[in-house]
Length: 147
Image (tube, rainbow, N blue to C red; front, side, top):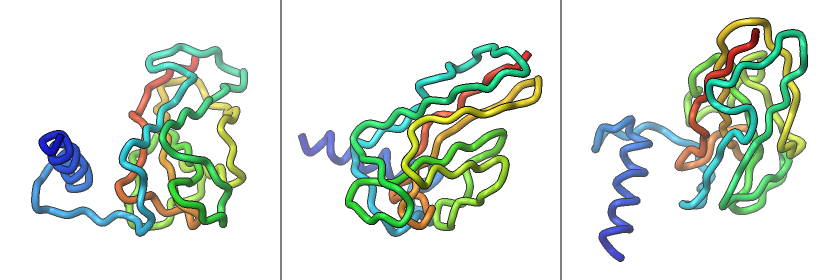
């Protein structure tokens, strides 16, 4: 069992340190549960979607709760949808713009409209102040095509 715990600790350390042991990357002050898992339930990676129609995006989360902005409840946070952008700094408030959508009311799905072309989507959880957790909880980045 101890080997498993040390392995998980090393994996978390490498995640936070950009894969470099001993090179710490800053993270937010709010702790995240070790088993939290964030994912995009829909659309699917590499899915082709019709242009001119709203795209439903469904947020999946396990091992953690969803709470609105301003609510401080242990092991909870709210979603941020990143569109056509990389992850922001993990120790600062997530920007609020067309590439960083905030769901501070505790929403677990949305609809978006995107122009034709290739787009990326990624989810990032944040605490009551829009700062990512420690360790950060984010989904894998998916690619969709609007045609």
